[in-house]
Image (cartoon, rainbow, N blue to C red; front, side, top):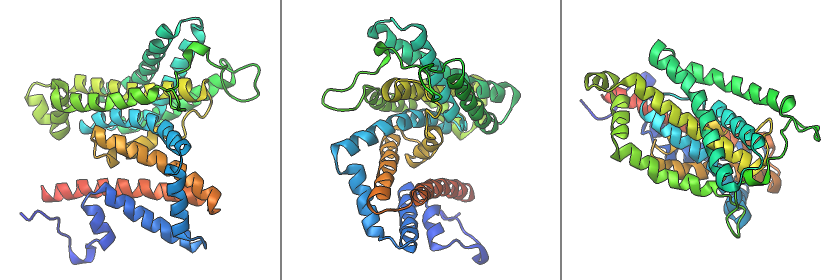
Length: 355
């Protein structure tokens, strides 16, 4: 059989779709930016000036690099967990809710034990955040493992439960009585993540970077990683080989949810220093695209997370410098997401046709 997917002439893809069929996320990003340039030109703004301002805004100053680094941390943590899940063909779409629950549990821990020294407070916060996300990931895992429920549906719906739960908490039980805003009280001083000397970066950056080689090691050098890849490639073969697939589903979802919860803790303790209603601008959903753009590789996720964080920072700069409407900057970001997802979909379609 030819190594290329073939199509009837009436359904032959366009040149742009042919690029997507190759499954290259980098080319998909380039196509998205080219289409974005056409849209920018259509509203009377120079695409060259717009993209120059975007690049300068994202990379042109230490402050911009720092801001991108802070935004990249939750994306990286979540995408590492999703990389493990997606490698097993376990479609965890609930990272946003897992982040919210991790943030809530971490805040609850910090406010409940305000006098703990930093040596106990910070590890406790990390464990609390991980546990909150892990428990929220455990629910769709159990439903998938023992009832056959589709984890895409269950994890997606649980996002909204978590978001509304946190909204309720910061409006009533945990609301700061000195503020009119829906937010908790400020965390005690020992619960603030230390900042790296000479920067605005907190130590969550180091944690996220250390997890990249650790997840890669787990994926490629451990029995868990081997089982993960076998279950992802052929669940029936995995069962035949004696792998406990339900147990594996639970382990992977707990790790994936836990990393999302840790991201929520870092946002609380390292950025906002309190629980707020909109603790995440959609990190859990964006991280899905980050994981796919990184080709489900931990090191790829590192690059992709910083790229997406820089894209957001650069889009803000486009709005300020060239006067591009905020809606159009969001359209450009959405185009990148759409094209990356389309690239992955076409890659999977092509692999089925070739196979």
